Image (cartoon, rainbow, N blue to C red; front, side, top):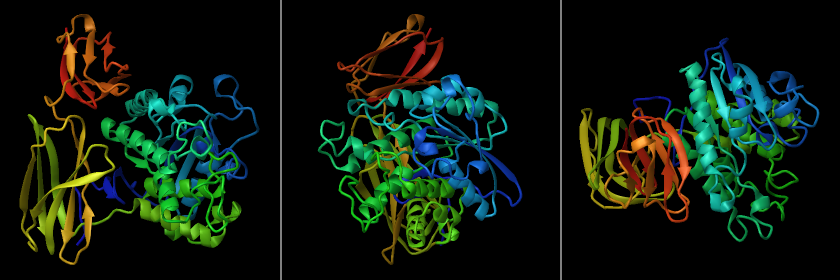
Length: 477
């Protein structure tokens, strides 16, 4: 029996929450999509960079000034591969790209906002510069990523609330891992992949207005861990696919193709395996038919929704003082044995807290509860692991909770006179978000090495100050 959620756009996918499959457009309907990014989007190397340029409107082609590029265009890149796949699937997509080499979302917001801020976009895809979503101690700039991904999302939705906005997750850079004296030297390549995952999914969960994350980086890691792709391109294995290009950080033809498959499945909801080993973009990029089929399977495995043998109609997690109350309800169950309540402190590594017996087989609703009394500080992630009688199992979506009052977080003064207050008790270098009464992120800053930061210039009103250490309500007079 299929597991159905109240919203058909959000699924738990391959153990990752927040990856949604886009609705398949009606045959003949035109869908206008804009890709915003950099050389990870348009591709550094030919033939990817120029691929299917005729099928893509390059918004920056021929411009001077802040949006000028120093080599010939127009470009097709990964959006061009996406367009070719959509055409073969019988989908009518009008594809546009606003891509500037080496630049983060902050640059696009400051120099090309008018492109994103068009009311006619049906879908907008945002990809940040390769290192911005990683921690600052690894040379990242998560503050800029969180701030400008949110600002761009708000700008897009300010013009058209129905536009679906996606985050396009990047992948680990071998050049920052395998050579000496680099941010990830001495660590497995998995570490940078995991940091990028945390950065993108933290923005997805905190913001709440993105349609989905297109998990390209996660698909790369899956390919490596399954033995399909080489782990270290500095010591390539001829029997495996090399997803990196010759500079060890931009994607190769195969890496670009896998990225396009992930985008295609996330955005359209069409199973990429239906494209087949004779898919036209793969042939044009000199990707062998067997390799194309393998990468299509990988993209499918990364994103496919995993059904539970129960119909779950509600699942919530709410802070109640120093505890977290979890509640869920099923409309019906078939051969279900139990639910395991699982918790994580980073959104990746989950541990079981309790086992709750299920109803077995029942056509009627059943309600379940569990109270987590463990007084851990900071953001927590919860999910359900449902197990069937035949041993099959799957996971629910993930819920995040930030308990109040279980930490050393302090605001002074509060109320903040003149819009200024000092935040203390934050982990050094951690992000501090200010949310308005509607839950929108109004400001993001970083705590210094003493765990403090100052918020100034806030307009009068009521806010929530949220950090990894906890959250507090803030009044500004």
